[in-house]
Amino acid sequence: MVIPDGEVELGCVNSPEDDAAGTAPSVYGSLAAVAKGIGDLGDLVRMLAGSLSQAKPWQRQLRVRLAEAQQLLEVLRLTVAMERSDVEILEAANLLAKECNAIVLAIVGSRADVTTKAAVRLVSRLAQQICDELRATAP
Image (cartoon, rainbow, N blue to C red; front, side, top):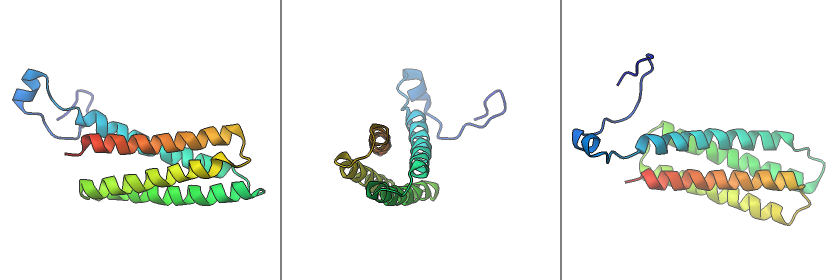
């Protein structure tokens, strides 16, 4: 489908019955939200890891865990890019969300500053939001 300004819209075409009844699924919106969430999560993890020094033990541990989250995020990106099955994509997203939740649990009792703790909670929420969106779009 070509949009007037020359951009190409990707995705499937709804059936005429869906369009007429106004019941067309909003898969485009969900997939766009997933793609944006993955990009935002990658940016946040990268910036958070880059802002940490390695002077204190909690900073070193957080950096290691953020590196693990970055690897799992890359696995999720590649799983989506390779058009793997929905089950594999959900599994990759679940592993990422579990790792991000583990990061939150590890930093709660640490001496990390309030800003770092808030950023880590945001990382976990974004990962969980990606999982929820993927579950919603899965058949």
